[in-house]
Length: 386
Image (cartoon, rainbow, N blue to C red; front, side, top):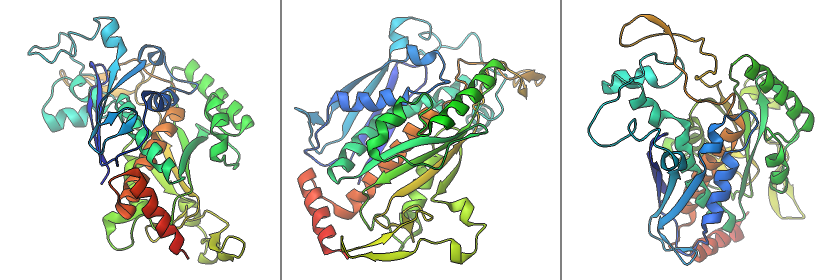
């Protein structure tokens, strides 16, 4: 079963991810993973930190001569800012000591206060360093491996931004062949007019020292029928995807298909009609109201997931009212280096989380200690359909 574990803090020496359960024989290179990490750094509205935090990674174990060994794959992503200057050495030193400037003016909407209360900390940095979205770089590295595995099964995953603040994109959806077009957009939006409106929203928020949230749509093409299960609550594919995507920092809503919209419709207008395709000898659905998942199982159609990200809690002009945890006096929340928006990057992370779920469920259904065995098993199942 595919699983992974990340470690590391935002301003520490680096991040580490260990991925267990990949079959042997999967072609993997540093460049494959580096390309996905580079996509995470895209997006108009990102802060200067993206110029400092170049993702220098090392494949430490689990890969030999460009192929996985079936053992856990370990990846290290160095924080180049740590190694190029000593700015964070004392602040994040793992040796015994204490900080000279604890952060106590906690930010509303961030993990600061609840984390301090939960663990008994007096310095918000003990919380924010791990709560930071910097951790998602390790997840994207894991997701790069999941995408490589899914590619062996002819499954592709991509995302695009459909809303930024109040700016909306048209309903046009890209295919995997359009991924370069999406990534070339400054806001990773497939609709050029929508992208222009989004950039204007970001510029206005930046001028005010404010932040913006938005919505991304993740699409998975070529997913075989039957991933997930209707049998147990914790095996349902849509539930697994919802949990994975909701785990992304600042995501506050997840939708499968047209979930929220169909809630206001009558049943006669809320479901995907099923037809028989004589030419391809398969069942088809021409709409995606259910997002390619019925009864907790993939239907073989396009999987559609949307994630809503709230505006970032760290503002360039601190105006959020809070309390200083040391003095209990009213205060304004402290400022860290931040972005105006991270919605375009969140789309890449959401791809990662969907890919990891799909790869894990493909492993569960088709099994196999090697990639060849996995592909054979999947092909044999598909041959039995319908």
